[in-house]
Length: 280
Image (cartoon, rainbow, N blue to C red; front, side, top):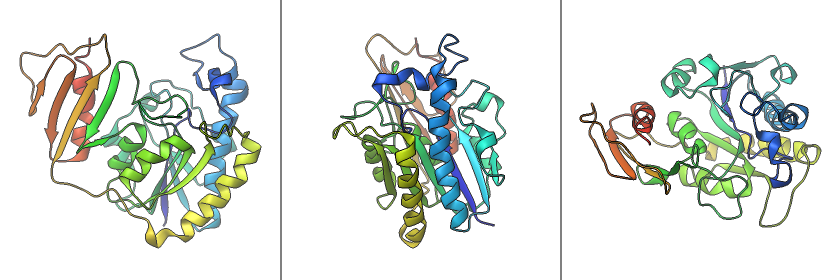
């Protein structure tokens, strides 16, 4: 069985720009917003569907989807009923980011991972809605010297799994390439070039790009496992850490920065939320 991991976000989806930014604001948090349901969901669904159709064409027979946008909200952003029957979703309470649980539900050796609908991390130029997990309060999150956001968390969680493609805003590709230089980067919008196509135009671009990415599979590389992970979480102006009297991991707190260490990536990512709890 060839299992493909697909991690979906929404700020980098086709058809969503500053002019219609409400399209990616989840209705459970913004109940007065109707554009998410009437338009935004169709955009990310189209992108994911293009990935799935190309994957099936190239012999993938099991797709595990994690819809991570607005994790904590129960309703999916992707319209699951429009996807092929081989697509399954991770069993997560309200789609929350439990990386141990996510990795544990996948195969030991998935065929590859694809990130779709991705935005750039905080600080990237010419990006649509750049942020690191959620900015503010987070300014940056480094793991072993790489500033990672949702792309990095996903790819590092699946360390050792070939990173096949990143699909999203042109500015998001910088992070993807830092994780795996040979990843195929498929752009669906580019602020620097003022290129803002609709989903109907990008669907064949994604499909063809994914076909080519699968054909180049022998050159795809994975983010490697390490035996030590050094993490640093930095806050934006106006936020600070209230350091605990003691904490059960090797790390330190300063006013706007926290550092910790772990021997495996899943522990490192899980400790992120432990540290996050001390933000004030």
